[in-house]
Image (cartoon, rainbow, N blue to C red):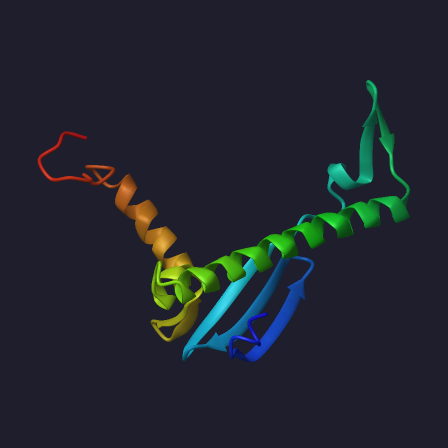
Length: 142
């Protein structure tokens, strides 16, 4: 899908220990990185199920299939998210940078980082300082 939009240097990775999958690519002269939190394979939602008031244990094969299905659902959600962003840019609702802001990779103090990680930290820091939430309209009480 992003390849048809002209993406270059497309790569995927999966860190099962950390439970994170990543896709990275260059598009419109920007480096983008999407990180997808995947469910833990041994989570109770996959290894067991309710039958009335009783909790039953799934077979290892059934637990794996259930986990795989949950992972596919996450990947589908990511695909839909990227598609929606591309549609938004193509229709002029927002610029490429606005749509993909969180996934843009920037150099920060000599390290490559997702801008979204930097922004989330800045937002948290701003909201936890004295004064808290910023005013939306000047002169209006919070």
